[in-house]
Structure formats: structure tokens, C-alpha cells
Image (cartoon, rainbow, N blue to C red):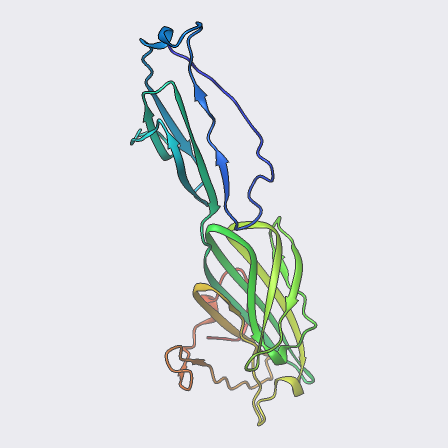
Length: 269
């Protein structure tokens, strides 16, 4: 005799809206034969398989299993598999989001006018693991606090942006999102700074550099726009991660090699 049961239960506060894990009881499967005494079940033979599927954004751990033995069921989407030979099985699942893994590619487009420096900064994030509910951006303190970040081509929203107190000349911005985001997320911010704000104390001018905190890999491009009658000398240096007191010169690239998301004229590095 074969028995098939299809059931659905909506869990409270689901899907997981935070990084905290929660325990969920496995459906309690019990098979009984009608009768008054236990001896009516003495000859009952039960064989079954128990398959657990879950999205790869979640960590799933089984606990307090009763009547279930680990088994590779070789079924599509298997995260956990069990076999059983008992008329009653039960257990608990601990479900939590995997740690987020971020990589980022940033683009800075800057133009120096007579009175101001205008800069467009954007970053394209690849978010894996359990996804991210917030993104932390690092900018120079002199970029100011009157900034407005926005998401590009996304159904998600930034519900809050919080600037922290500056540390060592840089300020971190926490961008809180309306829900967890996975895969690609693009954001941008536009800056208009006076020449006094960006001067390096001599005849040069600094460009704001954006960094994504927590990214395993964070590389980027800088493009300088200029009018035909402007002469721009660029000194492009990157502070060495191993030795913060040393800098390495950045290689200049052809503007055609800049990310295709932006059309830029001028010099790139």
C-alpha cells in the first residue's frame, strides 16, 4: 500500500527577515492501524524516505531526530535526506541565512570646473551567500554629509542611510535596504564639491574614492572628464594594503576599456 500526503503550512515571520536563525519542527509523520490494542500493529512494516529542500541562501541543520537515518536519496534539490523504518518520525530544523559574500567593482567619473569638482560614484556589487540587508560604504570625510545614495535599476529601496563619525579622515555610511538582496546590486552617489574642499594644499586636487566595507574583492576605475581646452595632469596612486605608508602608481587605460555602463570622455585609470 502506498500513501501520499500533500500539506502546506505558512510559518510565522517567514521568509527570514534577519540574519538570526530559528527552529522549525519537522512535520510529525505517524502511521497507525485502526484497532484497540498495540498487538494490531505488531506486524506493521513501514519504509519511507524523507527529503528536505532549501534555497542555497539558507543554512539548514537537523536536530533531535527520532526514527530518521541519514541517506543520500539522489533526488533533485536535496539538502538533507533520510530513510526511516518506523511508524513515527520527528525532528527539528535550525534555519539561518548563510554569511554574505560580497565583491564590488566601482567607477568614479570626475570633472573639474572653474569653481567646483563634480563626481559621480557608482559601485556594482555581487552578493552571494545569504544576501545582504545593508551595505556599508566608506568615503573621505571631506566629501561631506549632505549625500544621497540611490540604487540603480533595482526593485529594492534604501530605507535609511546613516553616516558614522569620521575616523582617520574617512566616514562610513550604512545603507539599510527594505529586504535582503542577492546577486547584483548597483548603487550610486553624486557629489558637487568646492575647489577648497578638494585641494591637496598645493596646485592639485583630490578625487573621492569609494570603498565597500566587507567586500572580498573591491576593484574599480577612475575617469577624468575635461573640456577640449583643458590641460589635465593626473597622478593616480593606490595606497598599498600591506604597507599603508607606500603607494603604487595606477596604470592608465583607454576610455574604451571603461565599464560599458557609462560613456566617458577623457582619461581613465
